[in-house]
Length: 196
Image (cartoon, one colour):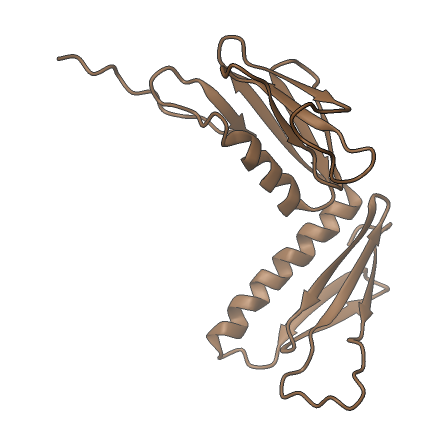
């Protein structure tokens, strides 16, 4: 664990008069310099934290059960991604490759209404007759260091990558000219032209 990150296990809320067969999931709250995040733990995953060594360990009730082993690794990955998110943050860099392809971050949009106050929009010019305006989700910060680059930063890796994919879908990389929107270090193998 990084030194400036705190983990706290929150017990599920007690329900009065309601009896259920399944145990409600526990929640781990992660707090760091960039913000807060929380991860739900399945009922069969137990969580221990060693404050002196700054280490967190996960274990399952039955190591022979395939489902529990799978969720053991998945839960560990979710926890690790959220710890990295609140301490360093997650980033995605998008490259716009093509003649005249440009991107800007605008405070307002013509075609889309804001979902929350102060929302910004990514405006893409990628070969259509009109600019494409995409609302930036809450918790994600977008900037354009170059007209052909978009830098996305945020705490939640899933939200950052999902927004990067929604930008990419407007111009997926094509294999003949190599034009399109590339995410992070993505490349594409070019094909030869079909000659009859």
